[in-house]
Length: 360
Image 1: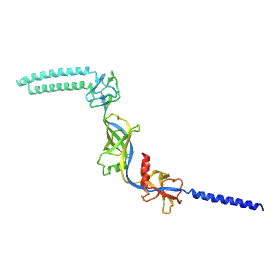
Image 2: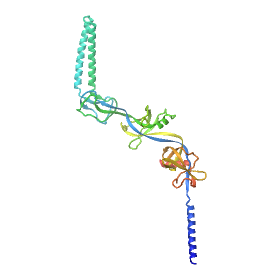
Image 3: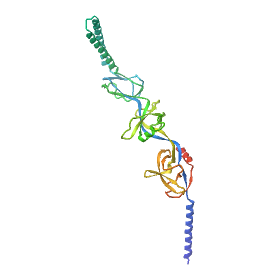
Image 4: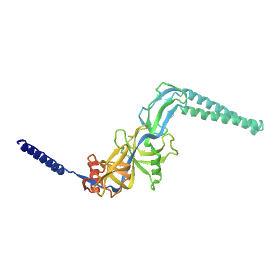
């Protein structure tokens, strides 16, 4: 008989625990935040690997054979047009010039004498013509000798910066031997490759005749202090990569950029009437991106979307959503497809503004 009160007491305890648990579950029911996609005019910045070139970058080579007698500049030095750079020992070429001048003088005397005789009809006109030809040939030899001698004094063809020396004073030079290179860095050409689809978007843009301004991100992750302009596009695509080369020109007043540098071109592209959603409202499954859409019955439905571009904390949606859809903003890991939830709608513009402030 004593067992009955004990059993009744245990049953009361169990019922009390069950009621309390039910009350706690009801008390902990979560309210989720929901928002809507929103249309906005915005822009995206695309990044392309780039190679920096001087607008003029040439090789300086010896035009004559001989010993390198003098180097008048140093590596890395800025030089002006016409400034002496290298001197090849000129002795042989000076002697050849003196010889050519002497032969020219002799030919001149012979021509004058022959002309005098021809005027007196002592010699034929053919002999006079031959003397004239010999004189002209001798004068040409003088010009040629002067040219060879001039090639021993190598001067800067334009303002620029001297690069690495490939020879030293006293070197025996062959004709055509590389001495150094000279770079004109007053402006820089920056080449970058653009995929075919993006090239088509660019070339078919209504403003494509306007000069597209771009920035250059340097290797130290800082943006170059001058803005560039896209001036030319190469004539054909690379069949292996499917890319085409663009060329942007950057002023370089402080000589920061040098030939052979690398960096990344930053091109800002405007997007009109783009449908935007927060990145945190999406999730991936097998390389596909999804959002949770809440229907009119407060039921969560998983929906695939196509992302057209990525901004800071935002996605541009190409398809799968419209501005009237209610999408789950937070707690996507706490719900599942087909679940009924309680939610509050957050203003889409306020959500985006808060994300933009966070990005800054």
